[in-house]
Image (tube, rainbow, N blue to C red; front, top):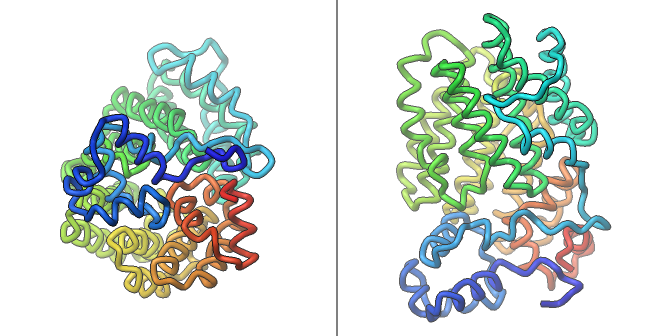
Length: 396
């Protein structure tokens, strides 16, 4: 491997994994329903392997994790890629548990709740450095708070689930899938202690997205069932409705990466119907920003995953980005527009979308295996905007 390009393309990792199993390229192609020529072009970097369903299928046949093919956690290239200091967060996640908390004082929970509100705002602004100065301490306190007397114990557990959800997102954005998974599982443990079906469903959502969906993890594949089981407990609670809606979107993704396109569309349509029922279609305080515009972001991604780039662009053109109260969600939409435009062969316009996404959320873009693979496929393009992003990603 060229030392100036430290992260090998996905195709190279597929070839290495295939050879390690002793499988020939024709057999692999046949088992995933592709031609030998297509598989050869993937391995040689002539076709971008940038669809989760294809990666998941190859990983299943080769009996490796999708993370192995994606190269996660992403390589650390300090000169180009944004980074954050994870020493304190790693210490909390590795050293403590809900049933083995740190011996630290717990401030009044009104104060930790205020910290969580600030952390959520910082996440929406992609101010990760500020988050890392506060999040580890809050997590420590809430681990300890889970052992307070009621009603403080239950409130601390709810806040711990929220804090773990924030950690999942940040760690995924920086390519640390190991820490994201610990955070998601810690959320599940806290929800089990709390015993509330709505919060258990919220924790299930967080855990489902702690790893790349290309892994087809049990947590992601369980989201259709979790959504169904939540319905009897929703009542008139807006929070419960928002959790239900995000689980329906997750169920759509689970079906898409499993190759069930029709069910993916049905689940996404149900989420869209749920979002349309709210008086305020895009409540900036909604859990995980569930609303009409965020559903549009998800449906754009699902169309890209289905290989329907034209539909992805049609859906994305209808999204009111001004209603997305988060740079992360705006960046996610621009990233999927980039992938759709690349699929359509409109690489100059694709580069502009990628530049837009990078300005909104640099880490989210530069650590994305899907985006990195598409950028590698476009490496020969001479457009200076695209080449600039490619350099900052460590692709060229």
